[in-house]
Image 1 (cartoon, one colour):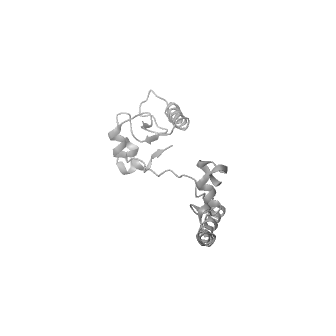
Image 2: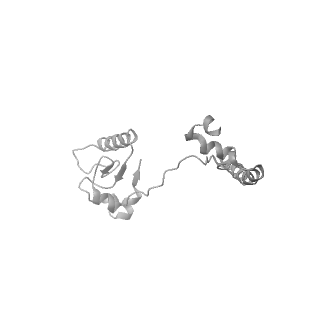
Image 3: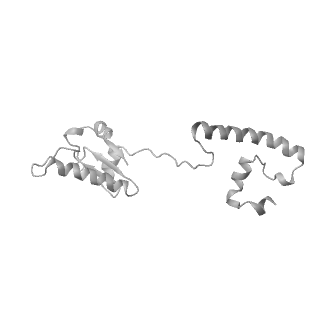
Amino acid sequence: MFANHVAESEREKVRFWHALPEGWEAMEYDTFLDQRRHLIAKVIQAGYAKLAEGIDPFDQVPPTIPPPTVAELVAAGESETVEFKSSLFHSYKPEIPAKVITGSVIKTVAAFLNTSGGTLAIGMADDEMPRTGARHASKASRVTTSV
């Protein structure tokens, strides 16, 4: 009867929130109550976590992937999701005004935000060599961010 009224994709959630043990329809009543007591405690704990911290036990949290190191970025080079900028404000070429540099960075960030994201490494030139503001990989890694 349960299977007739609850979609297969929802059965796990319904069983959880109603503290129904697997195979509950065919259980003896005392066995059902014994198993359900343990499940009710889990429902109460999950309900408390949802109210206190906003955590839903059925929310799928994707695994956290650590950002690439500067060495990994340099080795891979620029791509659709990786962009090197020598500076956020300063132009290393006298013929290019600083506002062009800043505008280019803003456009890159906007492009990453309008797609699936990316990594912007400031302090790295297109030729993949650290600039004055980021002579060492440790300094460059502090200005590397993912959007």
